[in-house]
Amino acid sequence: MKVLIAIGLIFCCLVGCSSNAQVTNDKEMGENIQQSFEKKGVSSVDVSKLSDFKWEKGYLLTNKSEKADVEKFVNAPISEEMMKKISAANQMLVFVHEGEVVCYVELPQDFIAHDKNQLEFSFSHSELKFNKKREGKPIKAGDKMLSSEDALAVESIMKQIQWKKADYSTALDPDVQLTYEGVVYNVRFTAESAELTSKRRGIYGKVTGETAQQLYDILM
Image 1: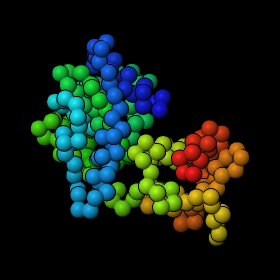
Image 2: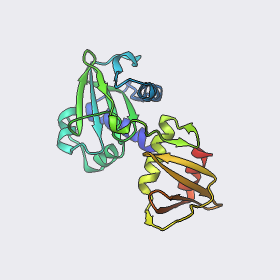
Image 3: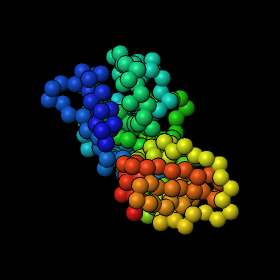
């Protein structure tokens, strides 16, 4: 959550928000966008119909967005440190009203389709296409679909894990099964860690400390 707050403050500083302006992370809008994707036969979403705030321009930034492109979009210089924080956001929709960022929405990796590493849209042309490659690959704990916020947290954790190749003819006896990118992972928790195995991929990974506790809180 600290990263998300920092990203909001970064954009506020970059585009010169007034002292009374408040840049918010619209989690409900993020949930509604993802729920639209889950509906059968739906391939795009009109974000203007899901927003309850005023905006004229919007931008899709990704963790592959180049520094020069971001600076061109926000019309302001950006430091390398700030760029790293933006890059950690996977996909972010940024909404601008009267030259100021008023809201942003966090989305999972490669959720919205885009030809380049970023995309510009407007209120009058606000239909965004979903990435078909993600179709049928929700993030789930057992049979439960994770919320947008929890899915983002799990994606971040999975990227942190140093995976090792392992020949597991029998996967660990799991406390819960995590479905991620179409692959089922058996997850077993101990007092100090969370161990993950995938029989299909033949890999093993482990997280400890606060990260393990965070994963436990999400999945259990």
